[in-house]
Structures are given as structure tokens and as C-alpha cells.
Image (tube, rainbow, N blue to C red; front, side):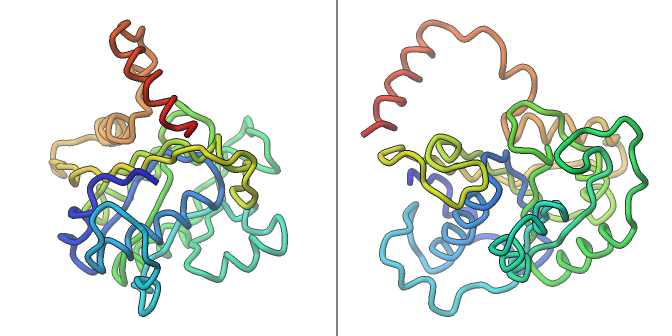
Length: 231
């Protein structure tokens, strides 16, 4: 895995940190984050080699997951006991978008608040593994209300490596990339929910502008990177 930014992890406080990331598989993304975070905290520099870091890991790491996903099988149910904050999605049910959005369950946001007070929380603001879907306003409300340190992460290569759930490798030899960015800066008094959503979209590289026409030189660079991914 190609990792960048592990020094940022070591500079974070022990609590009230919210990691925001694009999403490519249900579980492999989260597992990678647990490894990268703990390796970084144990002094590894952009690597997860030498698994000694798994002894005495940071335990107060939580992740936000859709309740229906975590109830979809035995292994997801087991993983739900390992740091999952399950939430009811207001816009989706039984794998399909719903026309009438449901009310937000206040227990969901309260559980996220409790987790932030206790440690680090991972969330995928788009609420789906599909690229360039809109960032949900719920994440912006959490940021504006609880004012955590917000650390963006951009991942790639996981969708090509694993099945949708991230439990089975479908193709070997794919290089995954994991980029940790500097914490975002917000003006909690002036930034609207819409402005926070926009900042999050840019930070995790899921804003519509990333779908613009790509210059030829950039395409060449991407092709070179893809060659390296298929080593």
C-alpha cells in the first residue's frame, strides 16, 4: 500500500478527531485505516510493514456504518461489535434510494458525539461506495455542532482489489493508495452547512469539478500510475 501523511496521524489528539474519506468497499477501507493509524502511532513512516504495531493498538477508534449493512451477514454482524456506530440512512433502504426521506434518528448523532468524546471516528460522508455521489449534510451538521478536528483521507485501488464488501480479494497485484491530508479549517460562525459540504467534497476529491476534462499531460501521469498499480 502506498501511504502518504502518516506524520499527520502522530500529531493528532487522543479524542475528538473525525476522519472523512471517500468510500470504495464496505470493510476493507476501514480495516486499512485501523492498520495505517496504529502503524503511524507506533512510529512507522508511511508503511504498515512489520505488524508489531498491532500489539497494544489504539482501541478508541470508531467508524460510522449503515445499520442495514452491518446486519447483512454473520461477518458484518461480528464486525459491528468492533467499533461500529450504526446509523439508519434517511435516503436509502434495502439497497435502494427512497423517495420520502425519513427523519434522522437523534440516537445516531448522540452516539457519534459520545464516540468523538472518547476517541477517533471514521465516516464516509457520501454514504455509498459509488464515486462522486453527493456528500450528505449529516456530516456537515456533525462538524458544525461538535467541532471535531476533521482529517480528510483519499483512498484508491481498493475497488479494483476487493469485492464490494471488501471481504474477498478479486484481483491481486493492485497497488492501493492511502493519502492523509492536513486537518480542514472551518469558520464555525460563518460557514453554512452547504459551505462545509463543499469543503468536504473538495477534501476527499469527490466534488463535481474532479470530473472535468483532464489535460493530456495529466492523463499520461495517470497512465503511468496505473502501470505501477498493476505491478
